[in-house]
Image: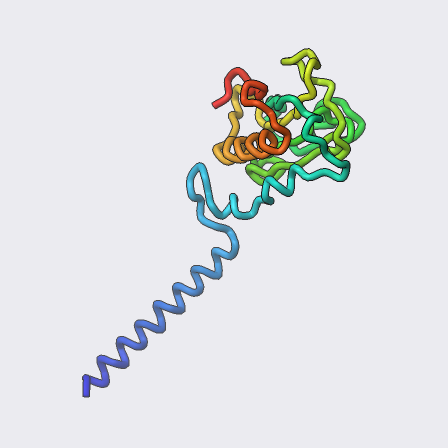
Length: 182
């Protein structure tokens, strides 16, 4: 039989190290450690894009001809804050179909459909086409100069654009990104 004193020391050390490890993990809670520019933890918490593009009003494949991605011109915000920044009375008046948050006002990469999208209404602010097409407007919460889109925002916008293009037969030539995108 092995040395009983040594066995007791090994078991006591094992018990102490397991206790310390459990205490460390409990203090961390549900706050994941920072994983650099793209964290799978944050990405897993986001709603699927397919759910985001559904609306309460029926959708037609012929309704939309293009997609326009533009900056909010702000460092942070969500749809309510963006509406107040633009002097609008409510988020229902916001001239975008989707907003993609940067972590300052909503989860990083979170996509929120607006009231215009839910009702399948046109946005009047499409300056790139002079309103000659029915463009889906996507607002990226960033100013485009000092605050650039996050990696998560870029990935989520790419997925959103891909889904919208597939669902509404939008050609890649009809997708407009901001001048200083990426």
